[in-house]
Length: 288
Picture 1 (cartoon, rainbow, N blue to C red):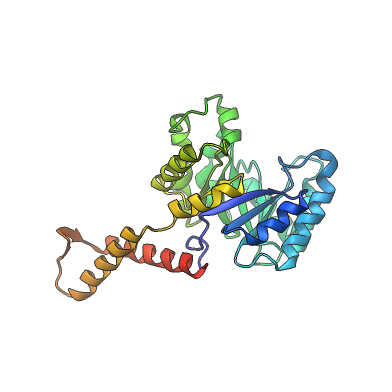
Picture 2: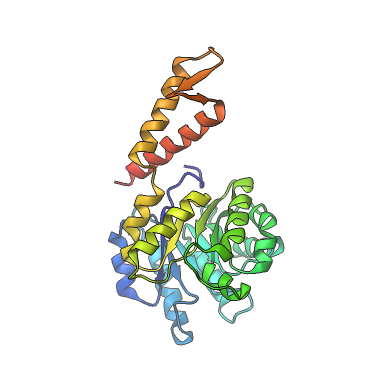
């Protein structure tokens, strides 16, 4: 399955210092996990968290869930050891915070190869600074090992000096530029987190906005956010039915030149979109 079509509707941050949380994650209906060694872990717990995350990645006990490890950023005292240990553990991906340039991607990829990371271990680059946003097209295209761009909206809000407001107007330019870069490079792109775990209505609205903007899924901070997120980022029954109708009309009129379905013109671009909807639906269905 290609990286772009692999379901990543819901990707949950888990503090790798919390062994109970790591155990619970084995049964959550989440598409992906980010076992966090960075923001969610205090300095005194960094080494234990690293050991826990690597053990989890090696365990093979997470089923279909994509298991990734977020290392501490370049320039921190933990980065090199985190990266070496993560590469040895061979998770599905290493998530690197504050990737600000194509050169930074090259540096991380070279280090991953030096540490013997298996080919299956991809790079997820976090976009969370103005510098990264302004260079995001180069970042997205910097390496075949890079599979996903991850919005770090909390850090971006801080760096931009804007307010967190409903609708995220101050972030729309950054969000859209990142989606554009991902689509141009053929990589997946994940929306940032919603902080207020009590505000389910607000969370679902932001999920819908993220999907409308073109994101493949959303990063999460609480298990209770998983199921509503999955629902929003999966093709709806209506979308699946419409896609099937478009394909049937197109295939039934092969060679006719002009195809109309439910009063609308159908071109090859609509057929390609319909195929992607059905491929995504099938991939999600196969998750059970």
